[in-house]
Length: 205
Image (tube, rainbow, N blue to C red):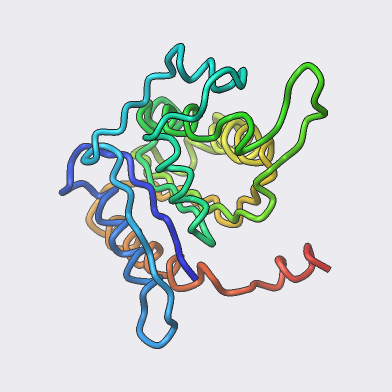
């Protein structure tokens, strides 16, 4: 099985990148035969701006640009998509949101149009979300931020395309003890990425 791990952070020495690396190590544990690819959007210079060309793609007036076709092919090769990102203003960073805006295009992630009944095209895709935030868990719960993020990302993006969010994890806090725990959690997520859990069996039945 193959995982595409998408990272959106400009600093290679950041906790976000450390979490992505530990998650990847969990995926590639010896004896399992799984593989991974890390898509470092900042290092690769992905352009997140949704332009008139992207709008024309949405309207099906022009072919998909080469850079977007490359990203879609990466996802098509993967059995699981993992997004690892710092929480910015209670959501994903603009770089990652722009990647979603451009890559999850009409005709590939879903079908819709004046004469087309809406179709979810990514029902085969399993998604794992790992966000990192500095605020406490109690702040997220008290203000409803956790539920708000689930609504806008888990449901608003992926459910619209039919993709199933298997993991939706917030790693909160940046003290040394918390960081150590985050890295352990990341490795565990990677190890379990292709493990069928009881709740998944129930949903599939």
